[in-house]
Image (cartoon, rainbow, N blue to C red; front, side, top):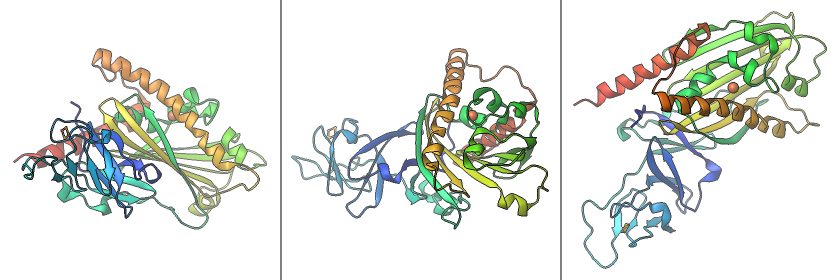
Length: 344
Ligand code: FES
Ligand SMILES: [Fe+2]
């Protein structure tokens, strides 16, 4: 069974997808059942009846209680069994695990690690969220048939855009421009400027640049599960100061990777932007990025199949692997630290 960093918040669902119905989703290799109480509070329980292990999601919701669809045992939102049909006594073992949840940024965040450590302040701050001048587009979801570390790897690797995303976000010249890699305690960043280039197709939709542009991309990964890709486009030749950058066309694309298992991933995305074009259906246009992410999914699913068949993750390393390698090492350090902490 795959090892996961459990003491972290992962997006379990978009808020809109959890309601007065039983939603089942496998998260970090555990079956999770989600629903909302009558007062709207979201709940997550292990989706496995304590009796015969039937998924509770096959049962039904009665007020705030879940009734198993096999023999009718009922569980409250803490996972405690509160009724066993045909007997008064409730066995001590009749309970299921409940998971800490936080609803923030229109998403439901789950903690599958030590509940004592589930501090909501550990949820990453999404800069500019709700700030004037910034629009948020959220609700993106895809199911990827590859492990989340392969996706993280891809999101730290701008070199692939030229080859995989030529039609959408790729820049022909970009494949040759090296990235600079930086690392902090909590993230790895690969960034580069592409100077004096033609605007990429998506930027041309946003605004009419009169000429060539400078464009910076920075690929940030915050292990275990969050990627933020920042992009800014400014007219070519201007100084790359904070002031000029703040006036540029800017986007921040977030991906929240939630492992379903070691080799399957729930891929949630949202995007912030500092522009809008009233006469253009910009939201629809940005939602079409789904097809860009699918282009990655096709490649990464194929990689996963070969990894599964061979037991090998990668056979050779080249210069562009610097950032993904740093990211993988950071993940490993986190995993080791968590394991060490768990030792009695
Ligand atoms: S399996 Fe759930 S009550 Fe028997
Ligand atoms: Fe990509």
